[in-house]
Image (cartoon, rainbow, N blue to C red; front, side, top):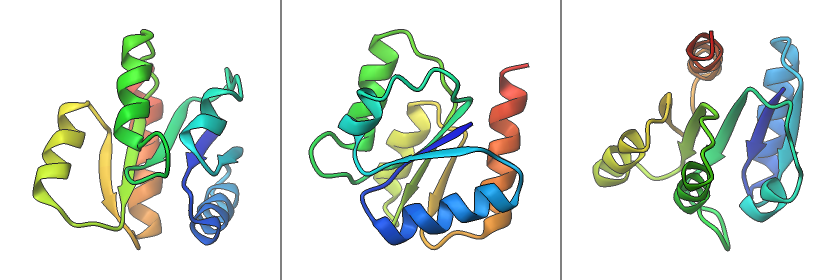
Length: 118
C-alpha cells in the first residue's frame, strides 16, 4: 500500500490512478493531519507533497523521524527550488519529483522504496 498526501484533489486522483494501474494499492489524504490520524500501518511508502496547508510535508517528515518512523518516502512539489531540494534530500527522501512528473519516475522511485526495506 502506498499513501499519497497532497492537498490538490486532481493530483491525488491522478497519482492514485497511476499507482493502481501499476499494480499498487493506494490510500490518499488531503493533509498531513489526515495521514497522521489514519493509523496506516500497512503502508510501505509515502508520496508526500512538500507544500501542504497546516502541517507541511517537511514538518510531517520531522515528526515521523522523531517518532522513530523509517517509512521510505518520496517528496513531490510544484516548486523548483534548489534549497528545498537539498533540505528534502537531507531528510533522506528516496526521490524529489517536480509536478508534473513523469509516471515512470514515480514508479521507479517506489521500486527503490520497496528495495530499501528488503
